Length: 408
Image: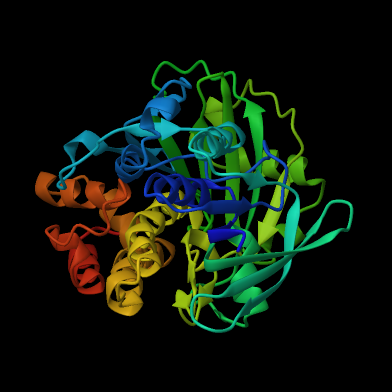
């Protein structure tokens, strides 16, 4: 066999899982479709991520990069501004993190996997997957020159993100419960001079008329920022102009962004993606497990993608280790149910964001500090903290609080 474990994808989940498994003594190989460094969105990490980076012994390498410090989130709507300081959250654990250009962040994690002795084969597209007898997995890849190669292992971990390799090859995909949306985004030289702007926080702006349209502004440490807008599917088709022109036009419709970005240089082409919310029938199978976005992706509004990816790696690695050592593993109880508990918490808040309940909650100036601390924990990524009342019976709790909040 080529490895004990084949990992599809060298992004955060794949590289962290690979490094952890290698340190446990297993033979690991990563197959990555792209050539690193490569562009990716999802640049605003959550404090919960720091625990997983620390667990993989990668936190020092990430910290050494000098990424933009992040201590919270700010929300803007029609002249109103509210902020959440993650150090004032309910849950124990990290209260700060970083905002990262993903090309460099992902490269640091991939370098960490290689330094641990994990080979990464770039520009390998997986075109077939077979899972036969227990302990036998087979992948077929095609490289950039069109050459095919067979790979065999005991176990496969799919960390392919939006590529969703195994869900597509094994017909595991199911429709998402979330309404289809699309995002338009770029990196800009932000040239922000406003004295009241806090670069230590992601800014989420809400369109003053269309409350289900929102923006992100994620500052980096080099004077640049990630800027994006998320709209219902088809909304952008009604706009005239090229992608970058449309993005700039829409950004200036939000008062806070118009003020901050008045001197910005829109110097990079804009990208557009849609239909990114996805679900699967199951997160594991005979000799494989799905990590992060390869299994399920909700929505970018609370920057939960990398957190879910790293959480899935943290949960899966000890179970893969047990299985490779011949010990029984209950993948449903020990992985799927545990991971989905946090995902469902995020889902409840995403749903409440788009129907307006959560927006009313976060902009309520009368909010109790104790409730705000519990919400801050969710926004910081601690969706698996069952001690936090706001992670339990989420829909009912959100409904009860939203009902007493004034309309926006």
